[in-house]
Image (cartoon, rainbow, N blue to C red; front, side, top):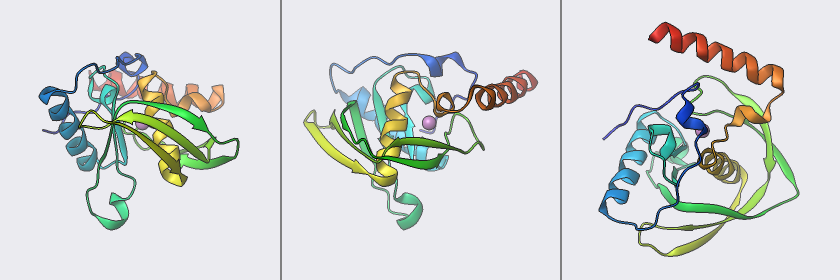
Length: 170
Ligand code: NI
């Protein structure tokens, strides 16, 4: 099932998400629906809060755009356990802030710990675009958006634009 994706200034996007205690059928269905929604958008990452579900769930697939093979990485309760001091700048976007792309500086590499769908604890070393994407998605679980890294002026002007658009819609 494809969900509508929440856009700023929806306040839900600022919520802190709850950890998953039990990985049951319901959680697996949400993850599958998140993947379907992400591929449909299309995007390379999606956090559950972007479809209004306040849970620490993320799906990522950084390579689909290149090879057209779906290989979703599902992250349950992900946390960053190490970040490199070396930084890289990527032009980021977000499905909740459509058509805005801005440069953000993040750690070039990071290591995460998470649970997979089978309830197994995994660790993964991330580099390049995956590292950026993982950090961006884990920020969502803490109510943080990539525009928070921009200058106040830039951020405010983007927010104002979306507030105007949301008023036009309602
Ligand atoms: Ni995002």
